[in-house]
Image (cartoon, rainbow, N blue to C red; front, side, top):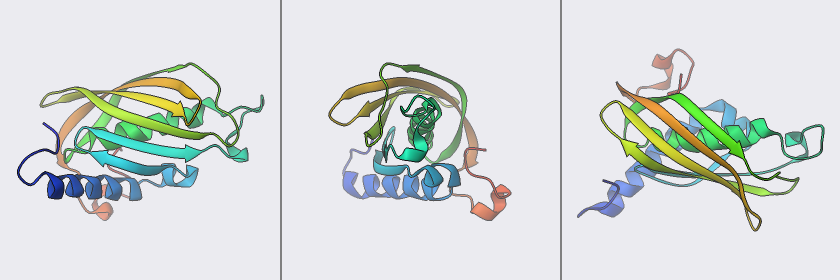
Length: 160
């Protein structure tokens, strides 16, 4: 699977463009400042710089922000194939605190996929400091195409 083949480069560009359109339709990660820096079939890499508004009462990065970053990578990777995939189970383990100014990078890679279910492993790291959290997600793969016009989704996103 993946982007390889005779026309691997055009296929990879098409997948990246699809992933970018999915992210553009999703206001929540955009509000947080999450950006997709790489994507392909079965994978996505997103990043975010921890700002003052992302801190908890202890002065470290809020765990919900780290979760949202991992969930965004998971959602983009699981939807990279074309059909809408919706998360049905996730788990996160926090290993180290993220700090103000940290560049957090979440890398999602596919572990398994069949016609109806897919599972992804997401590693969330702070650039130059190492692993911050490990996230695992399983999604249900629908028959609905992801390229449905946004106005037919009832104001929601492909992840609704």
